[in-house]
Length: 433
Image (cartoon, rainbow, N blue to C red; front, side, top):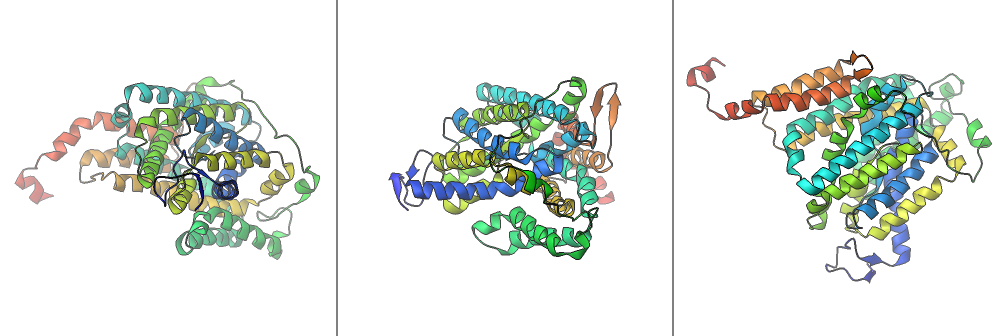
């Protein structure tokens, strides 16, 4: 491959290296495709404006690249970690987006402050609070807590929803190379086409009905629909959003380590900056009507396939996303995706989130032979699955927050139990068990 400023290894293009502009543009657009399906799915689930969300994914990426000194190649898109908290604060209504934006801003500020601490203190502070058994549990809690929302959309039309989810699964398992990284995009396109031609979807009240009225009315060119946060219920907003940065820390750190491994360059000294960059990006997005942001595993997958880490490629991807934000007709087309198709994707993605929690346990070699680890994982999972919700005046801990807090607190309470579990049990106890 042609490189403008030569890479040190023929098959690797490092962040500071440059490809020729035609290659840079094409690879940048490839990263837009990789992030597209998941990034636009979040506003569809939450009722946010797709144009605004895609616009701020580009802005967030540019902010992140600047804060990390153009040394950490990543694309930032809509974070699924915010879904439960946003749905809770909105109460199923689209009239409380302002409170959701305020919660996103609160989470962004907390995330930034965590980044400052990590930058000056080091990652050990995070490891103390969030060992793999805790992070895996908190991530699994998100998937389980959202299961009901996925099924509510899925059951609206079983045919289109099932075809959608099967498409996602088949693409992720059987395709190879770059297409394998786009299961959401393939699934939405297939589900959309089925909805267009299925006679059962022609009824206006059908869950798989597609209306082009919004597309016809939308302009080709226009400003993104900016919206602004409200902090009218700060105690409840804090109580529902405080734990999300902890999840993002674990997610972002995992992504940085993954990029380090693929690129064979240690990026761990930049972890504090990556958290700060993501925190600032999330804050800016929430201030103007966007979603919470996070680094995207899909784009890391693209880097793993291409071995190209040039920062300019991500600049091109970010600019392309920003330009898409100025096409209202694009946002209207995205908004026309029927709820049953969204339900099919949700069933797959929310399930993946839960299983990714288990993957964190496996990768972290969590020993569930230890009773302490069993307790740390077991209780939060049931709180999440059972829809637990506790209120103290305006302060609310829903099943997501209770699960996250339960995992963190239980681990600290049972920390001495980890030492106890390393000791050999008396022979008579082992035989009895």
